[in-house]
Image (cartoon, rainbow, N blue to C red; front, side):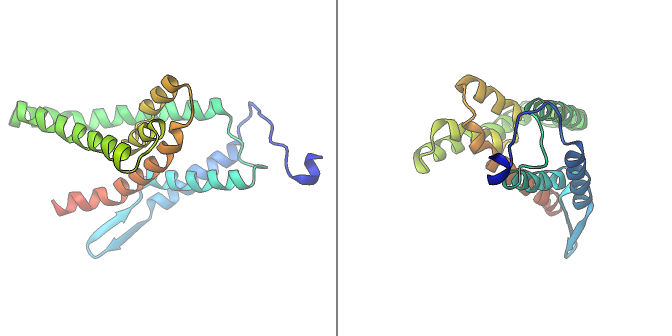
Length: 191
């Protein structure tokens, strides 16, 4: 019966490595391209390119489930390793700048850092709750996604015992990642 009306998508332990590899390769190639707008070079970078292709391939998988199978365990592993590598690289590269900032500005640097992290997140919660009237689970997923914080999403889904926060996370994550990747260099060049 499944052959007549569609495709039977069964759970499996095997990942479609060709699909994953093609997504990473194509994303890296797209991320390596640079578009010059005036004197400003815009690029997605490797991470942005892979994210964009991942979104496209995820959509393709949703409409054609006959290919691109990635088991939940594989997704969890790639997400955990990717997150931990990202945190390690950001920490190692930001460390000297933080030390220099502390030496130059002292406690003012710490206070501005706390404000820059906390104020937008608190505003997001109040705007999402009272202006847009988001459900709490989706709202907290959006907040985690806007900070591209997979660890926060994991904690929120564990505490709520639901995958509903991932609905808010996915759109906010994709949007913030692409905007940050494209316009991060613009902000640096304007400064």
